[in-house]
Length: 154
Image 1 (tube, helix red, strand yellow):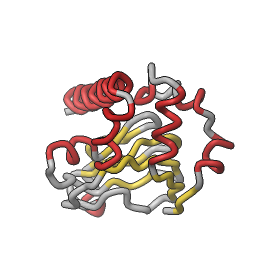
Image 2 (cartoon, rainbow, N blue to C red):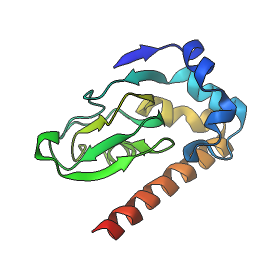
Image 3 (cartoon, one colour):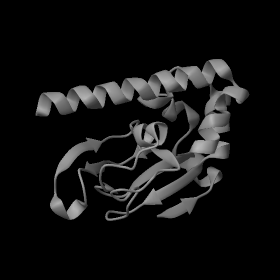
């Protein structure tokens, strides 16, 4: 994974574009800008690992571009749980529940992701309580959609 600067990111992904993604829906530009200023931004390649099976996450990732596959267990077992699309997140449930990730998470192709550390997430209510609540609702909605999608597939 290659860390990229906020300036590089802004050239390709203006805040208005991000607000079209489900996780950023209804968030104001100031709050999204704060997230971008404080998070780590990465460009990934196919085969990079966002999380390894059994890893304890210290944050979560939001996909901005590209798709990533969530496996149950190691990737080599090829038991796919979900394919995540732009605007979806991975690692949030494990971070909140303080449990290990259930499997490898790897980009299908090159992608761009934001890494929101557990520390950053914990400080968001101090920055803007209302906006952090909206973000939490958006993340919860994404989790619910993934759960329903998985339930229908099985």
